[in-house]
Length: 141
Image (cartoon, rainbow, N blue to C red; front, side, top):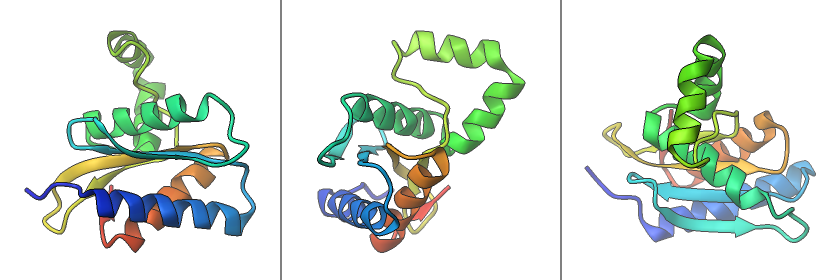
């Protein structure tokens, strides 16, 4: 299994921010985590609110921890709310099953991290994450 590099994380951030500006989204916070859920890189755009880091990281942390995009996790939470409330409590609030994060996969399909964004709608957040991954030559799930 390969590891997510700082260069890849920085590419994800740079392209995600550029995509957000190009689309005219609100100021974003974007968190890139490694496979263990540790912060690899973070960007906070000028004007982003103080909650952006916590939300972006919690979306990505949940995605990497559960091995699925936060969009999938949000749907699962609707079907099993007690389990997901328990996950959030167990993780001391670091888990947020809301659209806006995707897992990062290497060329062999192994999960090597996740990226989450906060600032726009869930769809906007997810779109900039995917744009960043694609620019870094990585896959998502």
